Structure formats: structure tokens, C-alpha cells
Image (cartoon, rainbow, N blue to C red; front, side):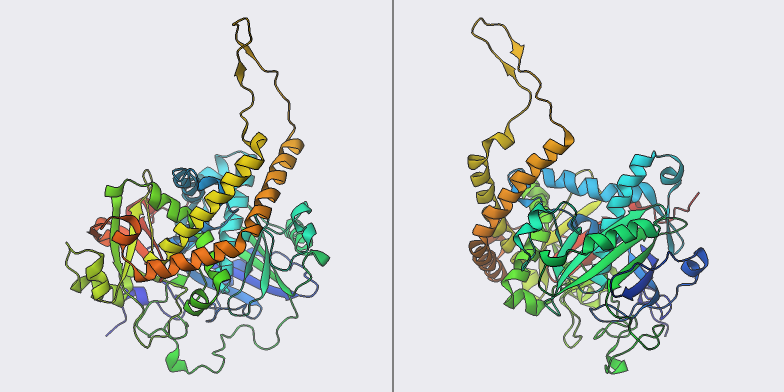
Amino acid sequence: MQPPAWAGTADNPISAPDAFDVPVFLHRSSPLTPAPRPSPAQVASAHQPWPKGAGIPVDGAYLVGTTWRALLDATTTVGRNIGPWIAATPRLARREIMARRYPLSAYLVRAGREVVPSVVYSHGTESSTRSAFGYHVGMTMAEWACRRMGLGPTTHAESAVPQGAAPGWAKTPSLPDLFGTHPATSELWLVEAKGSRRLGLRPRVKGAKQLDVGALVPVPHQKVLCGTSLERRLFMMIDVEGLPKTGNSGDVSVDNTDEKALGQDGVEGLPKTGNSGDVSVDSTDEEALVQDDEALLELARSRMLTYLVLTSLPRDGLRITAVGKPEEGSAARGDLIRLLESDRATTELRRHVPPDAGDEAVRQQNGLDMLTGRLPGTDLMLGMSRRLYGACRALAYAERRVVARVREERPKYLEELPREVQPVDGTVTRMPERQMSDRVYEERIAEVQEYVREVREEQRDDQLRSVRDGFTMGDSGSWMHLIDLAPRLALPREEGFLEAATADTYLAVEEEALDLDDEAE
């Protein structure tokens, strides 16, 4: 009996409907010195499978199988922390996700197993648009790549201060893009993202200098430079500070793991007929979520957009989607995206839950009852577990308190300029335009952001306790308890959606809207 198409092979680990391959060139050096850009022949010949495990592989040229779902999930979570302001206006979360999602489909198309820039990007846009998209795709792919290496949720460096950083961090003009804590090592990672049509050596050298933060981060940390290039096809160059590993970097090592414990995709603990899917969003395993309040807070913060979208949707648009738990004995990490069209646990669960059932019936079958909703005007459906919803709800309340205090103590920040005034004589005049240069505007924004960070840091202990309490309450409660509503069950796959999930997050995209058969022109 042949394995199903979605199971893939050793050379082609993922063959889902939205699958494609990304050449990734990984290089270590100390001090961090970016490697030269690979030649077109080297890009075309990359073939090593990405090894298992949540860490940085040995140096080499890898061909990494992934899916559009993984990229869409990465793009909805990466970027600055907008929680404090958007928490007061949750409907804006929909617009933010649309702003992140649609540039990818506007300027990238799939040609076989390759993703290439569209003819619109190559010939129909001006240079400023290409530059803006370079930043966007660079950040998205950096998030995607770091999840591949097991990094937990990232935070934009302009929005917060890493644990252990010196006070001067917030006032430094040129910082790395992202930082996060690796759950396996508890080590701080600093990540710089670069992206452009033809990413060369010069901007990556500049990125290496941005990672050289010196005394600003006196604690041990890992420097990771992620470069994304679009010329001919989408590929990545990842430069890591460290001594080059010796040995045969072209081989995938099992690292003393029994071969029988490896899945077909080289992922530890997955059965050979299973589908590893992709490395997920949250790269935070179950143990870390249960025991580490900091890890839980960062997961909740990274999912605030999804939470705010769910709270802003009409109540009759909310649904429950049944997702199976990882099979007993599979030892699959909770941070792996499962592609639900090929997930046996989900298929079995949905066979035993009646179509008209609710969340209680899903829990009775030991399943995950995800609250989901479709974003109006998009092809996306997002959702999350009860326990993550409870954690995000607690964090949203805490962020609203931050907003209220900043508004009270920094009222000038919210003034509308200019505005009409009514003189005593009854005539209507306008206040003189107050000219503000880009530099002054950026200084003003930086000032209030720094104050937001100070207020949040003062309230951090309270946030940690509140998020943990919300997580625990959501885990033990029901959706009626959380949202005073018992949504009906939905089966997005029957509606033409491709689904993916972890133990706490859910994403589905309308297959027809992906234009998966498009070829480069």
C-alpha cells in the first residue's frame, strides 16, 4: 500500500495542496560575518532536508518544505506590539491582518514547487512599493525561519525591552528587528530581518552591525541575521554568530534518536504515515506554557490580533471547530502545525461528533473545541483554544489599563491637528498649521512608546498573574462561561478551507482564493 499523497517522501517532505519549497542557506561565523550571496546554480541545487528538532542546524544548503498556511500565520503574528492602542478598538485588528496578509498574494505566486515574484511585482510596481514589500516579506520569512529553529513568539525591538537589556536599549536608534526567548535553552535571541528583490551582501553587512548591540545586552544571547531574496525565486540566507560546526553538514543527524521514532518527515515522534505539517506559530511547548508565566504572556501577546478579531465579530458569526489532540504516544511537540486535512486525530474526532453538536460534545470526545471566526472581506478564518482565549482576554484588560493611564498622563499625544475653532465674534477660523517634521514626529512617537513600556513594566507582575489566571480559568471552563454563548459547530473543510492548528491556535484559508495553480508569467 502506497503512503497517501500528503505524507510526502524524504526528498519532498510536504505535499499538501498549498505546499512549496524554500531554499535556505545557513552559515555560522564569529564574529558575525554574512556569507556571500549564493549563485543561481547554488539556489537551484539546494536539496538537503531540514533536520528534525528545535535548534539551529549545521551549516548547509537546505530545501525546506512548507505551506502558504505557515507563511500566513507568520505574517499575522510578526511585527510591533500594537496591543496597547488597538485593544481599545478591536475592529482595527481586522484591518491590520488584511494589511499583512494581502501583500503576499499580490506580489508572490507559486510556480510548481517554487514561489516567485509576480509579474505585477516585477514590472507593475514602483521602487518604493518594492522596498516596502521587501521589508514585509523579510519580516514574515524571518518569523517563519526562527520558528523552524524553535524560537518562541517574537517581539518587535521598538515595542519592548528584552529581559536583561541595559536602560539605553529604548533610546538606541538602530536596533535589531525582533527578539525572543528560545524555550529549549531559555536563551535570548536577537533577530535582524532583511528582504528585497535581489538581496546582496551590503544590506546584510549592515544588518550584522545592527545585531552588534554590545553593552546594551550584557546577558548571553544568540544573533541571527535572516535575509530573504526574491530574484528568480523566494529563498533565504541565514547567518548565525557562532563557531562553524564540523562534520558532514550535508547529512541529517538523528542525534542518538532511534530511527523508528522519526516520522517520514524526519520529525521526532511522528508516525511514518503521519504528516508533520510545519513548524508553528508558537514554538512554545506544553511544558513551557504550563510552568513558565513569561512564555505564556508572550504567547498571549503574539495572539492579540486574533483575539481582538474574535471579540469584534458579530456573535452569530462565531463557530466552534473540532480539532483532534495529538495521538497518545506520538510524542509530537505542541508547537507543530498540523495540516488538518491529513490529521488522523481530527478526522476521527469529527467522525464521532454530530454535525449539530456543540463544544461540550467535542470535549467529551477528548478533542479541542476551537472558537473560530471568518474575517469579513478576507479568505481567512482564525481561532484559538479556550485557555488561550482566557489568557488573551486577561491581557486585553491589562492593556486597556495601560491605555487609560497613558491617555490620562499624556493627553497631548491624542490631540487632533489641526482643528477648527470658534472665535468670540462667531466667525470660523482654523488654528495655524503646526508644522512637524518627520524627525519631530518620530521623536514624539518614541517618547510616548517609551512611556507605554514604562507603564507596562510597572504592571508586569500583575499582567503575569492575570494572564495565568485567565489561562487556567479558560482551560477548566466552557465557551458559555467565557463569552456567554454556545456557538454551533462548523466544518470549514467542507466549505473549501485548508485548515491548520496547534494545541492553542487555528488558521484556515479558502483554498480557491489561494490561486494555487497560478504560474509565473
